[in-house]
Every structure is written in C-alpha cells, then in structure tokens.
Length: 568
Ligand SMILES: [Zn+2]
Ligand SMILES: [Zn+2]
Image 1: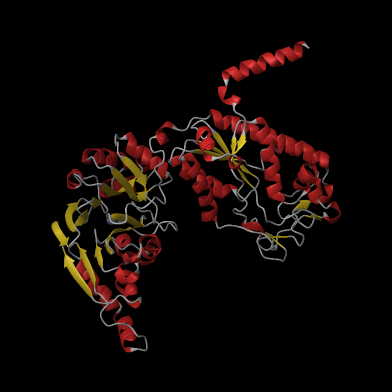
Image 2: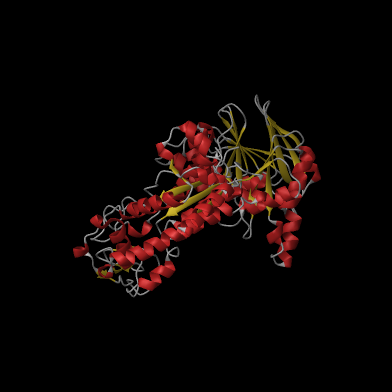
C-alpha cells in the first residue's frame, strides 16, 4: 500500500518534470500529416527500425527473421519510450549472404543513402535525433557513414550495435564455442519472440570453417570459396543449443540496452558548431533553377587516389552549354554522370570548352581524355582550350602522342568524324579571356608556389557570378576578384591536421595551398554568400572538421564541403 502510493507520487513528479512524457509513443504511418506536424518537433526522437525481410537464416529460420526481430524490438521500445516510430527499412547492406537463394542486399552507397534520405526528409520538419533500431552486423558500416554525413548537417543519428547491446546477458547463457549467424543466440531469441517461425527439427550445428585458412571477408558460402566461411546450411554457430529461456534473457537485456541508448540520445546535445550548418546538404543538393548558371562539381579530388573523388574539374552549365574548369583524371566520365541530372550540356558531344587553372598533373592528366574521348563519342566541334602559358606546348605534345590513334580511327574502318579531334588553344594571363552571348569569363593570377602562372576564373552571367580558385595560397586579390560573386569554389586544407605533417610538407602546403581558417577569413572579407570547398586535403579530418574550421575563422555565409556530382 505504502509502496503503491510512493510509486504514484514518483510518477507524478516524473510526469511534471518531463511534460514530453504526457504524449505517448506513436507510429508515424498511423497518423495524418497535421498530427505529424505537431509531433515532429526538434526534441522528438525518431526510431527507424531496420531489419532484412529477405535474407537467409539457415534451414530452421525464415528469410524474414530480421524483420521479425525488428518488429518485436520496436513494439517493446514503443511501450516504454516516448518516441516516434518510422516505417521499417526492409532492405539494406548484407553482402555476406548473397550466395544463398532469397537473400537480398543493397550496394554500400545505396544502403547509406537510403538512411540519409529518410532522415533528411523527417529532419526537415524538426527532429534532430534519430535512432536506427538496427538488427544487422554488416549494416553498421553504412550506418556509420550515414551518421557522419548527417552530423555535418546538425543531425545526431545513432544506431544499435546488435553485437554488444545484450552482450553481458549473452555471455551468461551462451554455450556454443563460436558463431554469429542463425546460431544459438539468434535462434533462442526467435524461440522467445515468435516460436511459430522456428523449426527446431531442422536446426543444425555448423561451425563454418574458413576455406583456405584465412578469413578475408565475413561472407558465408554454401560452396567452398577461399577466404569465406563454408556453411552448406547457412548457419554459423550451434543452433541446436537454442532455448526459449536463453532467448528471453538476451532479448530482454537487448531491449533494456536499446532503451538506455535512446535515453542517452535524448540527453545528448546536437553539437553547437554543426548546428550552424543545419540543413546544409554536403552531397546531393537540389539544383538551382533550370535557367540559372549552375556549378557542377565533376571532381573534387587532389593527387590522392581517392576512389570517391575524381581529379579536380568543375563545370559551369547554363542554357545547354558547358564551361569546364580543369581536366583532372576522370573528367569525361564524371561529366557523363552529372549529365544524368544536368542534361546534354555535359554529354560528350557538348564538351567543347575548357579553362585550365594551371598545368599541375592532377588538373590536366584528364586533358587527353577530354581531347579524344568526346571525339570518339561523336563530338564534331573542335575543343577550345584556354589556359596559362605552357598550355600550347602541353597540347602539342599530347597531339603528337596520339597521332597513331587519330590515324587509325580516321583512316581505318571506324566511321570517325574528321573534325572533333581538333583543338583551338588560347594562352592567357589575366583579364577578360572569353565572352559569348550569355557569359563573360575573367582570369586573375593566383599564388601557387613555384608556378609562374596559375589562374583563378570568374564566370559572370546576368543572374549569377561564380569564382573558381584552382590551386592557390591565400590571396587577398582573390577576395577582391570575387567581390559581388554569389559562389566561391575554393581549394582548402585542414589547419588542424596540417600540424601533423612533416616539416618539409608543411613548407610545401603553406606555399601552395590555403588552410580552412585562412579561407574562412578571406571568404568573409569577400562577403560571398556561398562557399564551396573542393580539392580538400583532409589528412584524417572530416568534411565537418573543415566546415568548422572555416566557420571558426569568422565566415558567416553558407559553407559546404563538396563531393563529386554535387550541384550548387
Ligand atoms: Zn591540385
Ligand atoms: Zn597545383
């Protein structure tokens, strides 16, 4: 009696201290949008269950085993936490099981981006804290990648580590010597949650030895493939040891762990430095209006062979025409990729004009590609190449190097046209270097270490002016050159990680390139509303770190750290 009154009093205190608790948990799909509008507030926590609906789990469990796990956990979380439950994601990254019929997986990038898109869409209306109720192991890597990108936008996303959330409880009941899949633990949990979906008469023990002795992937395979675990049944572990009681212990401990994680998430601040860029997408942004001058990031890389970043190349696009800046490796293929969203201006026959900032190989080793590939792909117009002194010599040598290629294509059986291989070269130093009916292009010299002439370009259309820095050390003149421009695309390196570089490299970087704080100060003086970072030298820093360094130096405009194929 006394105890009851004590609990009732505690509940009252608790409810008074946490008015949010007055609102029960709800499932998003079960309400109309005006109610969602009321509930999707900045302090709401959104839970996104993630469980494969078709993935092998041995002969004794169903393909939708993970979906059942996710549904059960979700129902329990819904009872005890004031959260908003989003629809379950039934497909994700499960590359380890594709050799078994009925198993599905998404590619890494797709799995990552599915989560990013769902979170972004919901965050747009308020929530900043998301919890992916995750039931997979291989899903954690793309989830971590998604969390990193969302963090840059001021969104805190966490997810369940299914291997650790109930680990202590698992250690207390586990008998199998090893195993992680359709094993003693997973089968026990399913016996507890939904025994009708388990056929224990078909449960097996399969310790799935590694074919060839050394594990090179976490893949299971029903046939012997070197470096993978050989499991004819699809089980890794001993499913025959499963009991409902073991499942109860582990499942209940896991629910408790998830509720603790959700409580911790609720108490965690959204990092203040990132809040400044809330909603600033660093990846696929919506393109500006169709008729305005667009900035398309073809390649944001450096000499580093980063597979996600092509060599430096930017395209300005307007009215069906393209104006390329630099020809880093991969330029023609990245243009073809961007053509999917921008249209024919970036298809090979339309790549007819390029401005080179300087002749460093990372900016020009795609030049032969730009001279020749579009011709082979039916460009009939010559390529106009505008660049610093030395451009003509480089082009002449490239022409000589490919003389045989030209001869075989033109004189041989290939129905190649006889004009698209030609080039028009114009060497420039400063001032107006190009003009047509919709755009004027100016160049200015920037300091880039030992280069006699390195150029930045300013593209002026009647609606929008854009400056592309190329490679440059910090330049006051560039801030002036950008005066009144709407977008500054600028190279950058992390000042924080610069300190970890050897002294000889520090000497080089500070003579040739611009640190994020130097750039932040410069962009603030230029009063440019949008700063796009490219040619990023990270040395272990993240995009968010670079953005933080820029903002920390006093820049008050919008700053984004570009990825390939982004459009601004
Ligand atoms: Zn460079
Ligand atoms: Zn350079």
